[in-house]
Length: 116
Length: 114
Image (cartoon, rainbow over all chains, first blue to last red; front, side, top):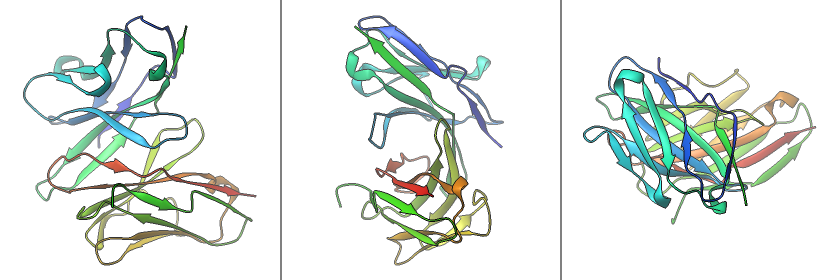
């Protein structure tokens, strides 16, 4: 069974500073990897996903993530954080099968606070 | 529809009562998922539907929880004899079901059991 670890429960960064949110996964094969964002009072929105190919993935809102198989990691990065990025971020790993079913396991989330 | 919708948005009930939570997925999406998000916790998988069948019910926490989906569209999550530990936000998501496709989430139903 797959699992996801987000070691940082809460992170505070200054507006304009760079950001890196950590995600480590456990899965026996090549995983499907996702980052979702949940803004206060809103549903989850997909930021980016990795299925195969280029290990550096670009997403919406200026986010990117890099799949590192050797480290079982899929860290999320942004070069310059905006106040509107304050939200909770969830890393997720999916294990698909031939029938198209994908069981997605979510991490416990990292809450990002942005200070002026 | 434009997105996944859930109703009600908030539900307050008394311990021991039954509740029904509804999810309307994106039109044409064959896969539907239910998750539970408790305060300070991640998303806990409950059940997955492909069409009207539920090949994976492994996340349902007890036999008080059940779900059905009709017409390959609307799904209802039922919690019988609610307990205080059932208080959480219940999220529904749908996807096209093709390979590793993106899940689109609804806004959730916040359930409070007094």
